[in-house]
Image (tube, rainbow, N blue to C red; front, side, top):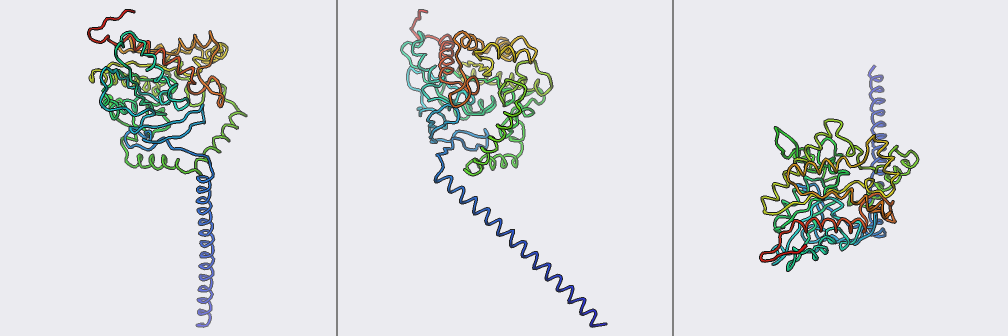
Length: 413
């Protein structure tokens, strides 16, 4: 009996030892594979950094605004258009400016998104630079000079732009603030429900008031996750994998194109009255942000000019493209957002310049594209040099009419 028990115990012990040995072998193999994968990733990262093309990082994470431009960053941007980008010491795609305003200078703080940062063209071709040069011939400027300060940052919504003015802009004592409002995605950027990238601050309506809200403002863990996701972009290997994924998605999209002519990332909903609560909220919050900005600017003794930038399809020089889009949406034209914004501005005494219709008229008459580059697709994306030039001249003309003559100066127009 004892011998049988002993035999069973030995058999169980041997089986346990065998399973333990197998588990150790499996774990050892997994560890070896993991170490190999990590080593391969490290070698790939090193190789891409040493032998790959330069990859300047223009943005850094910011716990207040989501992301900002990295002071001192410099390098070439060639994905859309081409330009050498240099970020100044205060995180602006601009030259350095003195904090104190020089005598007999009218300063114009320009806030906006990627159209204002304008990485696609050289700085001297950006609309705010064209605007500054054009103001030299404004009769009301006699004996004074204009100085434009570019606070534009790619991907920003109106809330972030207002915060940028608060954090960086007012110390320069601007006389004018120009807000570039891109109707293609600013409404979406301004509301938590519609914006996909929530790693940014929002304003929300609560109790009839506009207050800071959303996961970025209310959750420390969410902000930490945003920071981790942001800094993962510094990995060359992850960037390469991400680019490969985008290329595959692009190829699949070509095989099964969506039934639309509007660009990816831009919403058709801006061309029609809001059809659901989320879009009604997007309009309401955007309206309230414009009112807030107008009050803030007046409180600082400055004047606001809101410049509405239309979606690329609105200024396409091919009338057939516009007609097909209008027919598909069942609208007579594509200017619903522009007209509604203009009506709102007029009702509340906000100076507004809508670029969409004059740009469209010029584009059709002269058969020119204001959007697109040889390395992308004409009629899509951001303004090219021609678009910036047209916009800069129109904005300068609008500002010229708002500038009061210097004391003891009369103008003849």
